[in-house]
Length: 482
Image (tube, rainbow, N blue to C red; front, side):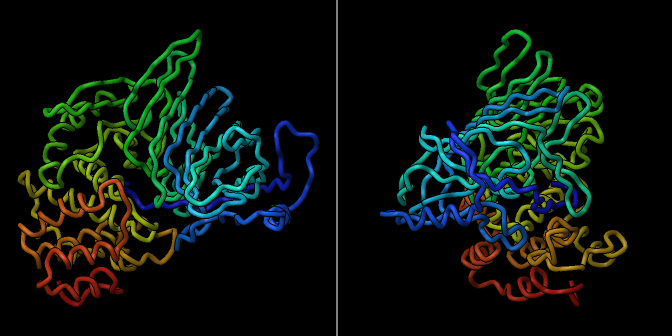
């Protein structure tokens, strides 16, 4: 991502009726009462999975008691009515005996829920969809929950004023999810600590294209509708999922080593985007030398017209850009495929591990291509940082002061300065090994700041790094010396 932005957990009017289909009657009770009665029933050993994973900034995001392995989304969108109809199948493994579990879903009306093919009772309260299967789910067992839903998906406004969730555009829609906006268009375990593979099927009016993550495996026209099926086999955090619907100039090429490249560009900005997107294979080749093997099976970009989103986002496989990108922005979002997408944050407090690395990738690109050296940029930031970024020293990169600043300037710029301090201490060779090794050690997984500091200290046990952590990573204010 390239700007400061973060989203709240947005409350919605609660519906307190548990439902089962086929339904005889709707009985109004509280979720806690129903679940309490379930837990007290004869022979029931399981407990509710719990809402939220207690993220330090978004405590209600995600859910306890299970781990998702796969999502299968089947969506149909009518741009004229702005109506989304969806069926989502969530395949998961129970991590405890479950009498009930939660999914995150904002706004949309739920029509039916089944667990392993059997109708299940469910309850809506804010963003929580609580599901009680007919039979409790044993720890270690796998299960499949199917949710059928419809409505006008929500556009979520973040504390800094930026928007995510489902964004209507001039000719379709754009779905963006960082940090919790993906819950506006499909039910799931919406926290980066639970990654899964995805199949995303989208049906749209004929003449429009639906672009998503991974690889396009099928495109089928039936009457006045076209269905696109996208498959992302590598694990993906839900905030990195996207759907872009509209009219696009489509390009299908390959990098020099054969990696598929799929780009979708709004015709309004196609001419302005052409020269930068032509350099995508060059950027990818450079990034593999710097960061190690590319972690996914395709790459590309989605370029919307100016104003549709207002910010770029590192959606997996193909980042989204708000208009024609610059080369540094392309470098930044592609670097995220290693740092943020493959190695994903364990909590939202660890965002500097995404943005600090992607920002430093811009520094390295400039240095490797005849531009400003990383050392000079570091010195310039230290000397004149407050003139360039008034909030540069507002908080330490590893300890943002609120959800509203979790993507603030210190996370990006001071995060990059932390990496440069490590480069000074370790030397270029060891620092290069750090860039590649960190991406490899947590490939397709999650990591937090403690994991990172421990990794660096194992890599360079004789290096004196105490002040790097204490002053630059966790220290308040402007360090006393560069």
